[in-house]
Structure formats: structure tokens, C-alpha cells
Length: 128
Image (cartoon, rainbow, N blue to C red; front, side):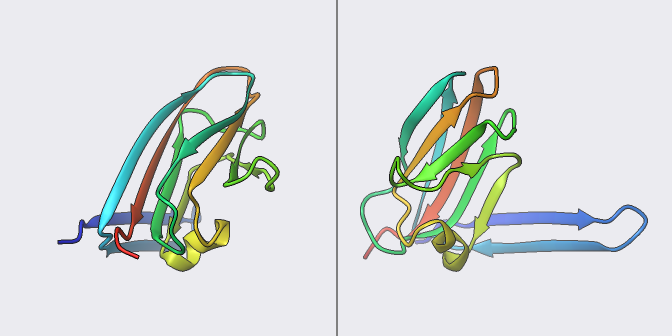
């Protein structure tokens, strides 16, 4: 039986419109990861999932602190750095696929001036 991940977001322009987003996805498995990324860390690898094309269908990356000096790369230390300047939520295989068709590893670097804690939630298929 698949797991259920519910999500609810609301975006509001002050004095203007509000756009609520809610939904559910039903991954076969999920991973919750919580790691500390010390200040002055370069290329700390975090394993997300086993090898498998297009398995991820939900990915949330949240940090205790955000900034331009906190970055991650996907699968390879030579990949393009992505700045973690706010929470990153990828909902659906298409959105997760923007990062890589098979995100297996996130590689964090922290030069923000203090240690941070990163939480990752991944919903994925468990069968090929």
C-alpha cells in the first residue's frame, strides 16, 4: 500500500490575491533525512534513494537558516550549485525531474557563517 503525503501551501500578495495549493501524492516509499551541515563544509554528500530512473515524485528541502552561501548540487560535485535561500519543494515527477531524472545524492556546502540543520523529505517509487 502506498504512503500518503499531504501538502498545503498558500501564497498571498499583501492587499491582493491569495492562491492556495493543496493536494496529496501517493509514493510507494518515503525517506526523511535530518542532517547537520557545519559551517565551512564543502561537498557533504547525502544519499537520497537507490539508483533508479525517475523514482522521486516529491522532494522537500528545508533548512534552519537560509542564504546565498548555503548551496547544494545534485548527484555530482561538478554539477551546478543551487542556492538554498528558502525552502525548496518539488511536487510531482516533473518537478523533481527538473533537478535530475534520478536524484540520488544531494551535495551540500555551507559557508553561511554558522552550522545549519537541513531536513529532507523524499516520496518515491519503490519498484522500477
